[in-house]
Length: 201
Image 1 (spheres, rainbow, N blue to C red):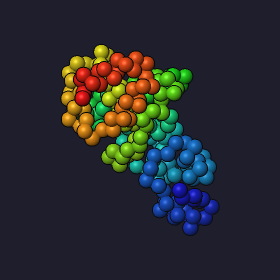
Image 2 (image 1 turned 180 degrees about the horizontal axis):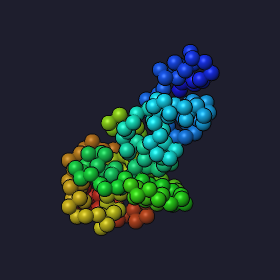
Image 3 (image 1 turned 45 degrees about the horizontal axis):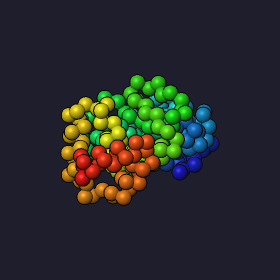
Image 4 (image 1 turned 135 degrees about the vertical axis):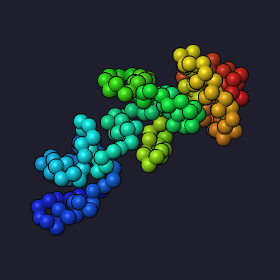
């Protein structure tokens, strides 16, 4: 990352040229610009924008999902929004589904549906992908297939059926051993394995 200071005009020019095209937390922004005072000067100059509390960017308009994931750095995109990101449904969910530790503080952001996950299961299948220029932490398709089978009764039937049919179409591209390995770690693993054999394979 660029480290810039505004002690003279030369460094000021470096500051304006060197601003990274990225979303920063408050801590990252302070590290980037040197102090809260210099960050406020950059905001006043229109070089950087305060997107919302604790989130800054060199762009006035930003990918909302990227902002959400920056705001909640320990959360993982899951639920129906993960299916949408993976191209398994065309329906855009109204909220961003974020998986967090079962001991995590409650997220009060109205844009977010918080999914509490047992600590040992939380990191299972996490990957980082790029979507519309944004780096996104999301559960892989194999983990999300397990989630689909586990949560079928709590999902609208038409959404479940659409996602299931799409999974059947790509099952040859998935790593079956990974799906089986994931399934063994969840409660009711036999039920999950049976549903996998009967409904997907």
